[in-house]
Length: 316
Picture 1 (cartoon, helix red, strand yellow):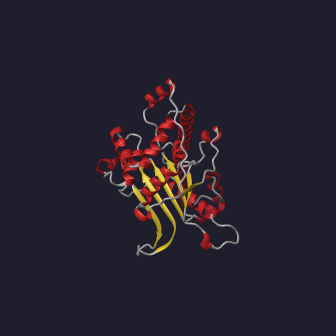
Picture 2: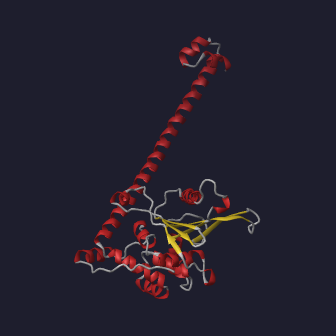
Picture 3: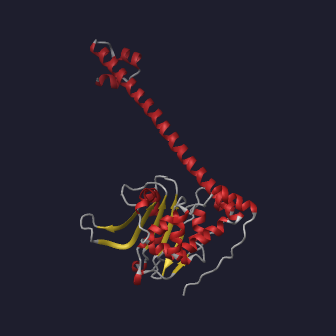
């Protein structure tokens, strides 16, 4: 039986209303808000709807039960920590573990990052002395707001399969999904709203037209529930403060990464120039020593002029 906890709505004060009017629709891809909408106790309805859409589950295969693993205490320190990960973690009825992460800026590590979190969930699934058959399957879903893969479609899914005979799967233990928001926006006008995932992508896209949002909410009760939660958070001064603190933390982190990368490239170019100059000087010195030796100059005199070891001079 699925339990739903109802969160009471509150009327917005004038300052909150003004902040909302200035900002517009809050971004569902802010990882703090996404966690509060999908990853806390009471969020089962919208999480199930989202997972069924991503995994393509419908009819008798549709997921109907889920346990959210709520293990984060969202203190101001956690929210302001540039490196903290606010992923959504849950367990399906068959013990499959699910990990959902949102990344809005490209840190150029999404492939290995996703494998790391999959491995973490996989390893946690077994205790010493247990059989390997007891290890649970792991599903990772990565929502990225940058172009990550060369594939033309916005939804990609990976399994462990044989390179040439694609129908041979090594194991179903690992399943990794990527939802590329950049590619989705490029293809949005071609999308059909009879596809559940397309409807969720409309909701996840902060810039979706209001009339389109209204349509998908009318079509999908889980999206309606998720949006009600987003509206509730958007009307709470404390939640807005946390939202803005999280946005700033992520902005600062990415700025630092980009600065370090730029500095590294500049340093690399400088080192390259210095190394090239040193190699050129070394080549020139050897050439001088070689000519002096051809002219019959003694090794000690060549060493005095060029600074090269006598052993090097003798080998020229």
